[in-house]
Length: 380
Image (cartoon, rainbow, N blue to C red):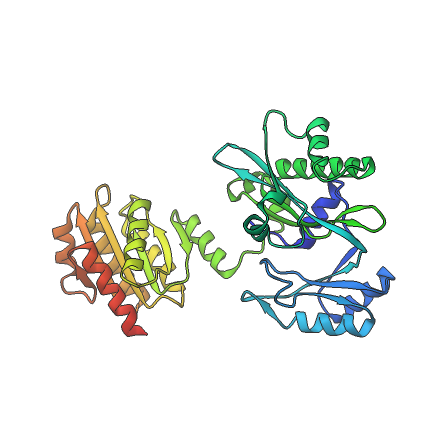
């Protein structure tokens, strides 16, 4: 789960990580009032949206007077960034930046630990630094049994600073950010940039946090921040019904049993120059009602032009799947092509049930995929 910058900064402040003064605003009047309250000649107007690339899209502006505050706020609240509408802006103190750094904690699953990344090249995408100046990135695995005691934090702080005052500031930021990361079951806690001001203070000028969805049951305060997108809503609905479902960008809706077969199906669609609209694993159950619910989920996606059902019947009975598809057809009145490939337990009975239906029945997986791609092209 992602949260907005202003929400992450509220968590930072609670954990003693210094951030600039900022006020959340929902309209131009609130932005003007915030500018008055901050009593600063220059402020930053920052779009609050759950995606990256705000600066490049025009979602971060420096305002030097009330008119610019109003104009920038108005224009941002009318824009979309990566197809997400901007509904709020942050009016922030414009600090005097001397230098910029990068700091993050994330999960290193290979080594089963938290990994800290630190760089003297802040303010740009860390991927760019890794590509063009990898020597400027420090990667340090944090022993989960040790954490971030003073001696570890101090050793890390000396990577960037010689001045003891800055080292001490950095130690506090490292320890507090690590503690926040652990306490809230985060999967990412990132400061980019962490700035050194001309006055000699370290400040988190931006804040990004994501959280482990499977740990949210014990993080009620974090759940309060949740703002799922339309696609994420669909994924949550599917999860509540017992499905593994992920939205993708194509137009061929997939209903498959088993994660491995689902992955193989998507690979074959791509191999045949089609594009899957989703990953949907219905699991081992052959309950006809579950098939109907899976069809409902697929048909909720307006991008889906054709549905491909690919079932290998082991525990799952093909005739139950066929009955579920027929029930779904009656209830949902689907007006898009549905290609069905059923093989395994009771497949002959299933094909007999589907013989007089409007479904396009395939005998092999390859045939089914090709039929789906052809129907997708025809739907144009």
